[in-house]
Image (cartoon, rainbow, N blue to C red; front, side):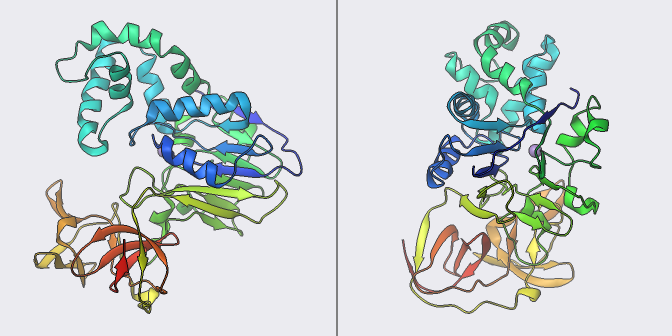
Length: 370
Ligand SMILES: [Mn+2]
């Protein structure tokens, strides 16, 4: 697929709502838009990746399709949307079987897939025995509107003060990008670390912003006012405590961004105050740098060596990744907590609670009520 560019002149006085990487979380999308009191007076920009990694890919696509009829919604394409569209529009039985095999594997990591949902709606259970060659042509006909919608999503949206794209852009000459291969812009991994700066704001999703955290994990968007980059992916669907980040501009001319977040986690109320540990000493084990050495294994918590320093981590987070001992995303940061704080509960242990407060994950050791 080639890069397509949509230009829009946003109107003064209308709020601009932006979010990305919904990844099959239709309930979260609806909840956060309700919280934002989303109305037809607003402009909603969805910066790609509607499907997979969550339980409601079809519902997400349909909800967005419906809103485009009644509201001002501008959805863009994500790399996962494109990847699924390519399979769904293919006439190659080999690719259909590949999609089947991939989706069956995805059951283990994501608990389902777009193909599972499509098969279920057709009254078929997707298993390794499903005759996908017999099924696929009727599946393509039945879901033609949704498939067409995915394929119609533009790569880049350019507005007066901001350019939106799922992964990133290598430079601001957008006309020169049109008709080049879209994939590198959709899957521009680690875009913020490429060190680029822009004249106009560039707002992206795709790479969870939490991976740019230096010490403890911050799930809110990264907003760099010097380099004019907004990286808004809250890791919804890819991390246990991932969230949907909805950024709201009162008007397109404003640089005042407010945030609403949704994570679907249970909430607890803190009953005690707790002082924070020194933030600069905190460490954050993240999936692209998660190799550890086991020093002492405990029932609940184990001591591991991470980058040469001992660190206490939940034992259940330690796993083998391609033969390398690794630890799931976690931190040793102790959050500042005030009595009455509402916290998202990630993991409850006798040792303490691993929680998230205002987009930051860390530990709370005090009493709480559910
Ligand atoms: Mn993506």
